[in-house]
Image (tube, rainbow, N blue to C red):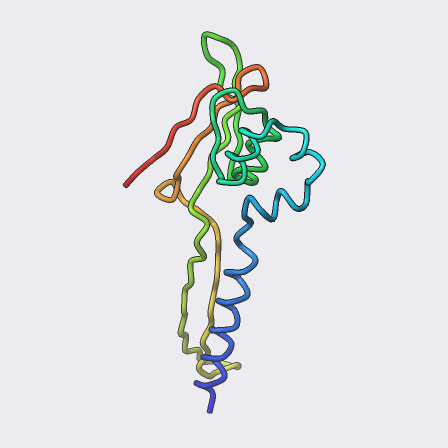
Length: 141
């Protein structure tokens, strides 16, 4: 009797998490329509396609790619740059099983879901120098 309930909970959790994890260029454009309308048509086309190019502002990149998974500052010979790191946004699911003894004995199961990324999930870095996109680095496996 417990197995169908666990299956239903697992399926529901996966569907909910998958829907919550992903934002698209179209959803970001809808949320920031006035900002998007200020950009030239070629920039709008690239943002709508989820693409960025050298010279884009932080606003443009945010609309095209969304919030980065990580940000940091890099100090180099040309001064400081801000680096945004993007990761694959796929939910990771873990299923656990445990047996306990003592005062509270029994069998338990658990489902864990995370969108936390590790270094292997990195797909892109964009670098801003003087508030303009100056470098795009992509990682392929």
